[in-house]
Figure (cartoon, rainbow, N blue to C red):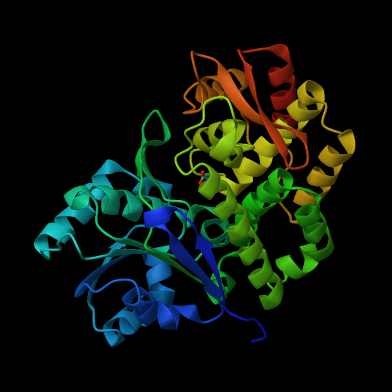
Amino acid sequence: MQCNNAIVTVDLGPRSYDIHVGAGLLDALGPTIRSVCDADQITIVTDKNVAAHYSKRAVESVETAGFSAKTITIPPGESSKSLAMAQRIYDGLAERRRGRRDPIVALGGGVVGDLAGFVAATWMRGVPFVQCPTTTESMIDAGVGGKTAVNHESGKNLIGAFHQPIVVVMDIETARTLEDRDFRAGLAESVKHALISGDDFLQWHEANATRILGRDPSALSELVLRNCRIKADVVQADERESTADEVGRAVLNFGHTAGHAFETLSQGELRHGEAVSLGMVVALALSVSEMGLAADVRRRAELLLEALQLPIRSTADFDIDDVFRAMSQDKKNVANQLRFVLLKGLGDAAWYRTGVCRVVASAIADVIGR
Ligand code: GLY
């Protein structure tokens, strides 16, 4: 395979770490962890689908590097991102007497990464955490940046902690076994990164959409690397999404205010990335009407989403009042106001605060066909 392995460093002072990107890196998982960790025991958290393809290789690799490994396998899907599932993993760690130095490895997509990361952040007040993302969504977004969470029945990711990994290993070959729908869904976060970073990456997507969908190894490698660099820059500037008036890390929530609402209301029908694609269409419409974004940028973004076979209109039967109710649970809201990250231009984001209002209703109505 013609793609070189590369490293992106996330520079966070004492919490700095490297992201290794390349083909076949799963076989180097153990030695890569060994280079940053001198523990004896490792716990690998994965899901049933990922385990079938990659667990054996991951275990062999960490054992070769001198770790004794145990695997905890959870059911696939968003419903596993719960306190009940975290409890099951704590039980497994207690049974195996895992201590403060023993790393937890997340082998899988965003659900596994968020859940295993949350357990790593809280077990014994925090143990070393390793991300080994195997989906486009987690290589492009969730596997980098240290956000960990489980869901509460009233909303997504409401219980969580920041806990940076000690290293991230992305084997782009693992994305080749994804179902088409899951592969494509993850690309929505890449379009988001393009829109928030500037015209260069947007043009790259426009020129390479067919190669990306064809899972061309060098296109995938470049896609993942460029996304990691963009995300690393954002996280380095605002690790804990702490700035109140500046958008800071919250720029990564572009498309997520309505997107999370669509995802919650679809009750598992929409993939996270599909919901974010719809949420970005809402945010783009608001960006044009409220922030003066050029209509051409909105048109290009929607054409790109379509070219990547992501939804720009919902086929589900959403009720607009339900969408507003779900958006009212968003973590970004302040003083009962909805907060959207919108674009004034490519790579130029700003907050938009509002109540329930006609412009937002109309942007949502266009997407849900009401
Ligand atoms: N996925 C958004 C963030 O990492 O901040």
